[in-house]
Image (cartoon, rainbow, N blue to C red; front, side, top):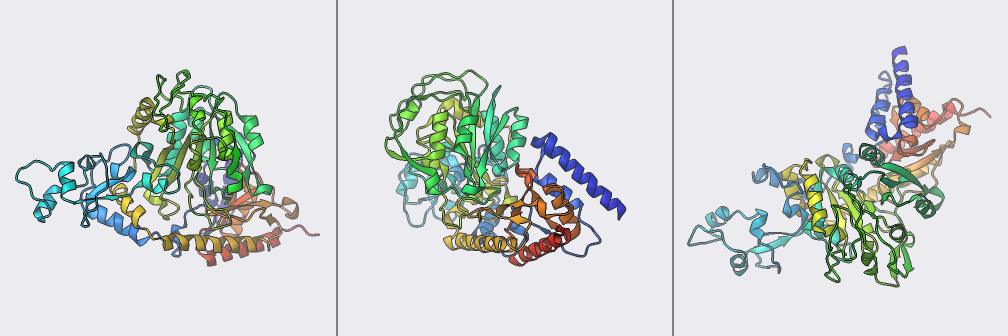
Length: 540
């Protein structure tokens, strides 16, 4: 028993050291691993972890049947066992063409044969295609045969919520959203660069930034204002070396969803600013008066790889139209926005989810997302890195080429998983999403209601989205608890309940509680936490 106690002390000391001397070394999995090591094996209570946003361990959270069927069909087809293009299968990135029974044919200049999704030997054997020679049929012949249809993919899925259409050139398939984060920071990195990150936030950003030698500057999310961005702090922190502003919406770890009022404002854009180097490739910025704007058709005259400035770009923004407060701030500061939307559409409060890409005409947006959360398949590692940029700054050929070259050194998701994506996006029924949001709303209410029964923990803002909530510790009510790390280690040891210390996400003496679990497990975990408080409460 003494050995276990000593191990617990050592683990806590390791975490304290990492938290206060090198915050960029902290990872959620690393901290949760230390907490699990501190569980008392002689304690017969089952372990309940409310530390990570992975609800797959609970039967009430399951992926859609069509998602499972699509992956099985893709695997059993034996057509997707080879390498995929490094940027992702074409049919996963954007519309692809398939044999159609109805004969409905979309207008397109794209040759479907380039996508490798039509098996003509199979068609001929089934009598559904006849040819007098061995030549593969042309696109026009396929149109004439009324055998081509279309299936949506990531570009079309995201475009449903945007005032413009994304194309396959805008979409790059990644191994989960974590790899998309790495891609974004790798592309932005240049000597002297800094990046603006939210506090509290997701620690992978700090870790990736440290590997890329990007200075991290934190702006606060304001709990008293529903965890809205402190825009004054953003403006104060930014300088000519700032390469991006990161926005996580719906919020992790806070459970906030940016309100439309926070996103929207009416402003007249004068177009009198120049962008600093965007996605800096290490070269000097070159002022570029003619970015490839879809509206004007004008193109970039010259630029270093991923180094482009433009006042012309901002002149394309219509005057007196709704503009995002966040996007407008980024526009004034001449920096793109990284929109982390891995929890996209997991919104169950008064605020609807509004993707940052809606404001892509105001400022270039890099959208990061995945299937992981909305479809409850984090282990499938299917994510995307998307340039939500209707004025085309990211479509400059050298920029696209640089992104593609970087993807050449990455390993993407399994090919058969990628191949299943179009059907998953097309056929998942809305009732599935509504059920997931209902469960999350129900659990968030349980969480907040039970927290009200624990005096040492307060919740400043009820979650409206994602799968987690931030709560504040009142250490003055506790007798022998020094900080959030100490609280979590002792709670794990005594009650076999795991919370994530707020230090891990940038807020000392706060806790992140994940509520995407079975309701009965959530109730039991918070009952144990109440008992823990009662044992450690200061005597009045």
